[in-house]
Every structure is written in C-alpha cells, then in structure tokens.
Amino acid sequence: MNIILLGPPGAGKGTQAQRLVEAHGMRQLSTGDMLRAAVKAGTPVGLQAKAVMERGELVSDEIVSALIGEELDGMGPTTGAIFDGYPRTAAQAAALDAILDARGRTLDHVIELEVDEDALVERICGRFTCANCGKGYHDAFEQPREPGVCDKCGAREFKRRPDDNEATVRTRMAEYRAKTAPILPIYDQRGIVARVNGMADIDHVTAAIERIMAG
Ligand code: AMP
Image 1: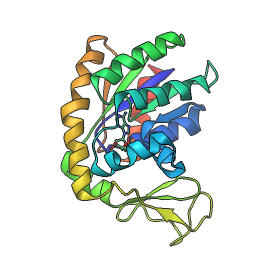
Image 2: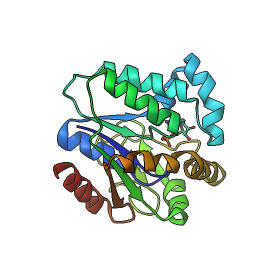
Image 3: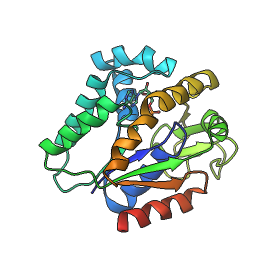
Image 4: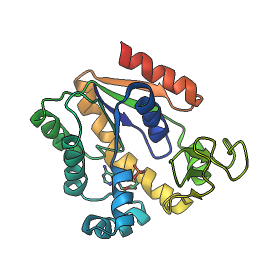
C-alpha cells in the first residue's frame, strides 16, 4: 500500500505516519526528515537546503523528488510507503507518479488532514522531540511523564526544529496554501482522496486513517 498524508504544517502527518509504521511495518518517507538529516550531515543537498528551510520556503522539486526515488529504491518491493510532506507542488505530484510507475507501485490513498490553521501555530510552536528516538512531545499538550526523560526510550535530550517559530510557520502555511493545497484536485479526479478531521484527538485520527486503509 502506498499513501500520501497531506495537510499543512502541524496537521499531524508525522505523528500519524509514525503510528502506521509501528502498526503495519510501512515506511515513512518524510522529505523534511531527509532534508534535516542532509543539513546535519553537511551534504551538498543539506548546504543548499538549509537557508531555504529556515525561511520556511520550499526546497527545489528536483532535490526532493530525487530523495524520494533513492529512498524507495532502498525499500523492499512489498513494503508500504507513507509519503509525509511530499508531494508539495504540482511538479512533485507529477514526479511521484513517474517514480511510482517506474517501480511498479500505485497510489492507494491520499489522506487529507483537515485542520484549523489558527490552532496550528500553537501546536507547532510548542512541539519538541526526543533527540534519541524521535518521539514527539508538546509543551502544553503532552509533556514526558517524568520531566526531562523520554517516555519511550529514557533519553534525556530533546530538540526543537529551528523552523518551528511563528514567523517561519506563517511562511510555511502560505506555501502550503499557494502550492500544495492546489494539488488536491489532481487526486480528487482519480477518486482517491479521503478527508479526516485532523483536530480530533490523535487516537481518533489514527482510527479514521485505519478505516480508510481497510476500506
Ligand atoms: P516538514 O518537516 O515537512 O515540515 O518540512 C520542513 C521544510 O523542509 C519545509 O518547510 C521545506 O523547506 C522543506 N521541505 C520538506 N519537504 C519538502 C518538499 N516536498 N518540497 C519542498 N520542500 C520541502
């Protein structure tokens, strides 16, 4: 199964993707995570992407589509893919069609997480993750059970994304509205879009996604 999770920054794509990975052994393909890893490693792609990401603008279509192709090539042919944060433009949507086609894969579902944008700024600006295992937390909504210690792996180091500040979040939202939301009709025409209320609590959103995948 190959699915796209679509929605503005902070809609919960990463959280839901991680759950699907754990429940079904699918692979999360997050271009944001790949780019952050490239920035950290100081690769040529990372050097090119760093400033763009800090501004909240979009990295070039060629770069992200190449990352996705490479990642798929490293996966077993029967492992399901969850595209998280990709595609983000019409050019990327077209590239993904070709990438999947070349690998004998088809797109099963595009799941749009519908959210209230005003609530997203609060969601994003309070979020942080375990530096070791990546488990997500939030200042207001989900602190570790024992302060300063990760619930999942016991690590004591946490990190925040440099682009999770209000000014950058506003740019990321504007990019979403201008370039990403307009790709939905492409998938609507194929009859593969399902919409989920992304403001519901995390378990409800997961259950709704599971129903779509089962049906
Ligand atoms: P994300 O983790 O998905 O919020 O992505 C963080 C940042 O990485 C974005 O604000 C963009 O600068 C860049 N990025 C991630 N995925 C893409 C993509 N598919 N196309 C262009 N830029 C991307």
